[in-house]
Image (cartoon, rainbow, N blue to C red; front, side, top):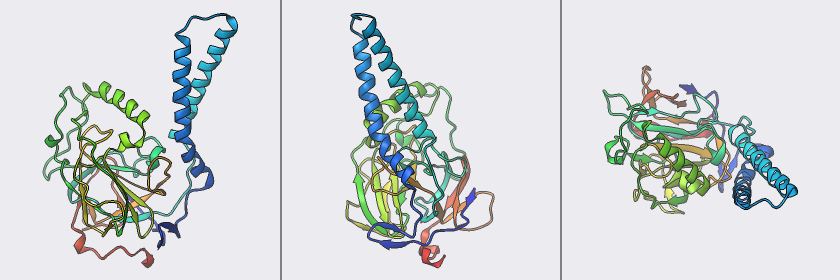
Length: 319
């Protein structure tokens, strides 16, 4: 469990993150660079591979092919370095209301490591993945030799998802199918191949059904892997803190139904930089505090999310 030492003083200003210490120029530049660099690497790799299929006409051509292969390798290494390491700087933590109700377990969490998903791509630096776990039970571990299961087999599927604050919907993308599970060693090779293909396709295929809210108190809240057909608000609609906006699903690049939550500096994840956040309205198991404030559950930590009507509204100007 991680607590926030301070929540930034945020004032709505037409979508601008007023008062928030935004990422530096280098961080924003690297975020903008990743997508075109990936596209360039893919085109060059395909071209060099196709070129090598033809007979060599001489030593000079063989040398050019070798140089091309080395160039592809260097581009690939640069991509991996940018995705894994990047450049980060400390920014203010944004406080949001819990997007779920009931008992849940954290999977990938920024309270355990940063970047939480092993990459800075698509603004995922401080992203949080959670799964629903009924009271008195434990989450099914990844592994085993079980086959693929329909999404309805998991307690997370269909759970209501709520807005983390007052704001305006800036992206509402539905229509991606809910996939069968890939959460076993038997299906891991298939998931790896699918992940690679989805990564080539871009964030649309990674996040699946996606809702992004421009929060009045700062930042863009992204809710991903949502259930097909469950997203309620459209682009331009106003939502309020604790309002149900969708349901948890298994669309996009996902091993099982879960909710992916992140905050970022842009309305779309493609070139976004992530922001750290804390959740209100949750109680981590092992604590006696009801609706504990300013908490991010650590990896494999269970927590209970209570109703938002027992809490005062978010008012960051009070900090």
